[in-house]
Length: 65
Image (cartoon, rainbow, N blue to C red; front, side, top):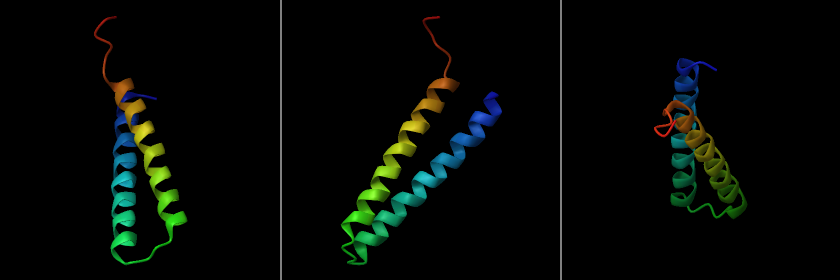
């Protein structure tokens, strides 16, 4: 993938991560105690965060190289 494609993918992942954060917050504030759903959303957020970090690392040049 080119740097531009990585940046676009990174932005999409950040948006999805933000949306999941809002969904978790809304679920908790609504009093809906569906803990399984909240746990799944949080797990997905962590997976997205891992992908975001991976792409960020690909975009940052290795200073020691």
